[in-house]
Image 1 (cartoon, helix red, strand yellow):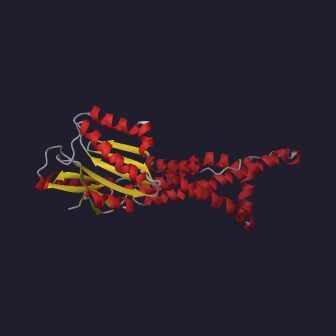
Image 2 (image 1 turned 180 degrees about the vertical axis):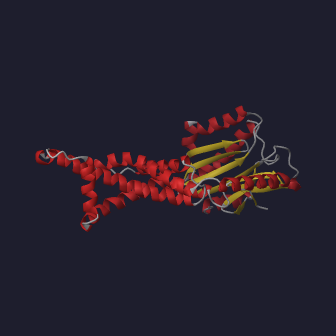
Image 3 (image 1 turned 45 degrees about the vertical axis):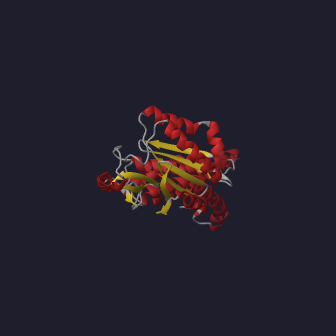
Amino acid sequence: MVGKGLKTFAAEKGLKVSNGVAYGIYRGFMLSMQEGNGWKSVAFAVRFPEETALQAAVGFLNDKTVKKQYRIAGCEAALSCVSVTFSDNPGTMKRICEFIEVFCDKLVALGGVGATHCSSCGQPLDGSAAVPALMNGTVFYMHSGCLERDAAELLQTKEEISQKGNIATGVLGALLGAVIGAIPWAIAYYFGWFVAILGLLIGLAAKKGYELLQGKECKAKGVVIILATVFGVFLGESAAIIYAIYSMWLADPEIAAQGVTVLDAAFGFFSTLFTDSSIIGDMAGDIFLGLLFAGLGIYPTVLSVFKSTGKKANMLIRLE
């Protein structure tokens, strides 16, 4: 997505806006800019003469003073690109503009080459044969032939991946992962806490379980993770209630003398749950609150899954 601030910058610097990205050559480097909920990002298509130069660039971006000054939330570096994400607050766009100037100077000082060389093969570009290509929100500048070759290879790889895996085993893995992830949630709920990060833990555990049991890499993966997380929240809250019932029974000498177990408490809870609608009503508020916090926790994970399994994910798209 490209908002007003990025569009204004693009217009001032002669950049173009297409496919949800503002892009163009600026100070010798192909820039691509986009934004989402609470963040903005700038990617630089750049190649370095040696690994030490790349690490120096990353070190600069991870410097605490630099991160604070420009509101840098994170960075990713690869052979042909450096991407920087910013926390989007009032005034962030001004800092991004300042950062771009400073970082371009840094790239030049480190020997980085940009729009004069192909992002794929690293060889000099002939302007007439150079084309911009978008992949996963980043625009690269490439030889037309390199783009065609790389696009074909990426398509073949994607088709091979789509043939692997099984949704059924993925579902099983996600449910097992959610069960494990629900343990901290149950403990927190027992003490009356709602913690969004524990919802993230359930989602991550479900995602990991899906992948460990070789679930199919498709959009169903995101849906499975959502449903497994809902299951994990319900399981975690139910487990906390069951343990509370069990503890209450143990505190009563007459009931404790009967040798009650946690399984007895679970059986009693679920028997009552399915026969007394008022119990469901009493739990509904907590379940809703639990799902709300879990949703806040897993949102980034699910969003990344849907993006990575979309039709255009990991594919090169010619822009001009």
